[in-house]
Image 1 (cartoon, rainbow, N blue to C red):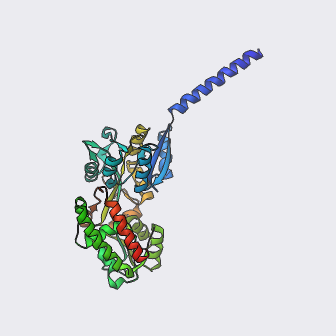
Image 2: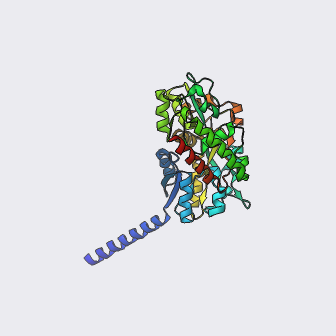
Image 3: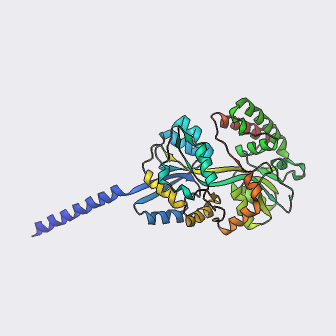
Length: 361
């Protein structure tokens, strides 16, 4: 009897182990390579409740790191990446790190048509589409309107009336904005590297000359926020999300679309070439584009979802900030970042190094 009981128990345990093995085999991990705040805990929790057979694993990154990570592995290690729309075409041609998107598995009907069409146009190679839009936002200017009421141009950062009271970040955005303020279209010059170098040289000299106007060169949103809230800085180059957060604390601080147009970016959904959980990736894409999830996501990112009515789906505080910043003309005047051809970032990097060396930025 004892031996029969042991045998029965052993059989039961073996069956349990086999069932666990089957369950484990069916379980799936969705590995996201995305921006900080683009996978908030409350959204992950709801997703995993809807799809209990999928576990979400998140690695936060940025454009340069995403490309570097996927390049190092040939597109392995992640199942869904979120590079900006201008960082996909050249990276795919050069490194072959993504796979085409199966649009039949995505509810693109909810997406804002011009953003969807723009991303598809930017990321189509040999007839295959490699990305769809997720969130969009802008880079431009921010000002305390009680202290800089007429501030509305990239060039105003160097206006002597604001000497020692402006700020900027020494990254490619300030190069592009300054180029527009000098009457150039830097994106149109991407096809002629000699022309683009001439523009960069002019921009570099302008920003070096501007150094006495700059109180500090900000590195991140927190130090820029501190400068603006303290009043040490009255106007700055900025991400719109930083300005929107400050508007909630001080409604005199507003995002200012430059008169030449705010620089607009679209962060995308893009599937790495050796991703192992495509179906889970498509489920995540469709899940986070639902209205109630859009609002939760925008509360975390500060950005606008690329869905119809994305501005209306913003949390109330951010909706007020966007309304204070943009009218229809400013929205129509957006300058979307163009695809970056090989060599451009190296040229821009050298220009930024020259400016940093001359300004101590």
